[in-house]
Length: 289
Figure 1 (spheres, rainbow, N blue to C red):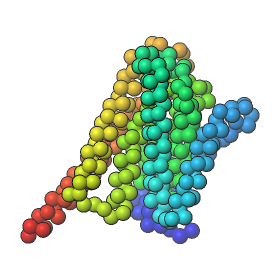
Figure 2 (cartoon, rainbow, N blue to C red):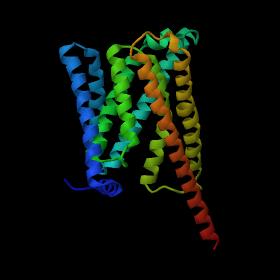
Figure 3 (cartoon, one colour):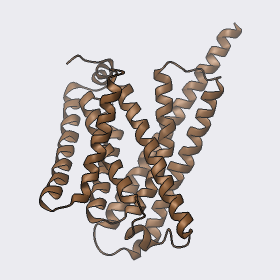
Figure 4 (cartoon, helix red, strand yellow):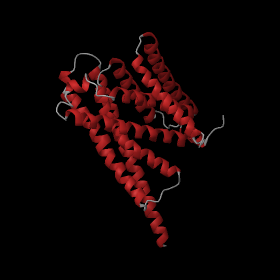
């Protein structure tokens, strides 16, 4: 297979042995995940998990269709990720607004509702999104669209696959996890920014670029950072209401991981913002000379 520019950059960023170790670890965990889901469907009659497989199939099919237009693995992967963010954001907003309009906010965020209840279409939306994370993990491993000894994006997907799959299998905390997916509103602008830069449109003085950064920061703080902090606070406050089992430890573990990753993402986003501002100022100074 022809080595792409993205693969060459990944190899340059990390040693060959280290890269093989990372790829092997996350590949094995993905195979174990697939084995668990397949076993539950085939032998435990957990047919509700078929929607997870359907989600993976949908996004893999989308990948193949986009690949017919472009052979750049990073562009194809980002395009599918943007599609997922749009579909998931629309689904979450639909589920929450529908529930709000039908029953009002009273009791909507009660512990029993968030842990034991399932809003209409919440299970399907979560399953479909879970399928996406499995597809995306495979696509990034296949084309090596990651960097570093401990790639945050692969860790993020692994944590979500564990939390989402166990929640779907046990049919608990579905509504809690739907709330965590509000962050996909911010992911939309992350993917838009990446595709804009790949297209070579980097004019920091453009109104569209400035608007993109405003929406990027606004959704980061509201839809991602603040919402995940509030969910974590809600879990801690209602800790005594959980029954003995894996639900609370798993939820706290997942949210702790998400919050740490959010801090790292915020730092990276700020660095990118400073780079673009510095580049813009440099171009302005050059024109004046």
